[in-house]
Image (cartoon, rainbow, N blue to C red; front, top):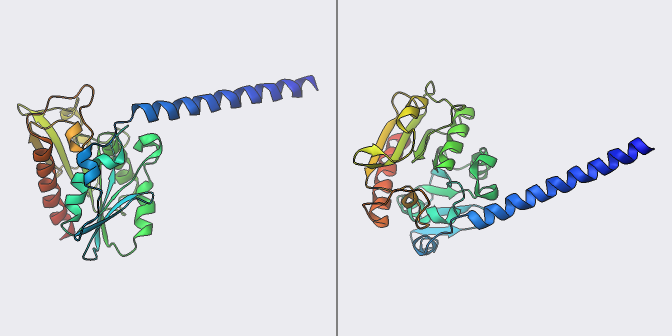
Length: 249
């Protein structure tokens, strides 16, 4: 009886520790997440060309029914709405665009969320997955484990983890990244190129910052951008549309 009592007390103690840890993680995520800026919030309004819904996922649906889609994994501790300006502009060109909010705003906790999106839109014949920063790493993991479900992968200021080596994968890949004086802003970027297929496209944006891939204000440890937020978004959209055209043709 005494042994059972000890086990019970120990179990209750462990449960309390887990509950406190979970609560702490939730509070940390909530207080550390970068909120979407005004530019992003404005891009969430529906128009005659794109309807926007926010029932779980943030979905940008073109007025003309699309048969091709883009799924986007947000950066770590960044509000998913922050990527609305770029994804909306892509949707305006006839591509269904879906931003997937992540548990605790950390895409690494749900790398397979793209599966649910793909299942929800059976009318979409071809999908591309994209992600920024940690979202790009999570997207790389998905691409490595689900090579037959997506036709392309786009990583923004990011690269896959070592566990998701895509070098022998025939998936189409584009890496859009910021540079300063021709040098990638992302630490270890050049050392990780081997993780992507040999024919991966590297598309630098000179003067870009990490945070301006979205619209959530300055980010700690980031470079100071030389180009404006609007200009960076234009260049990201241009590179994404060129890539999507190649993948979807």
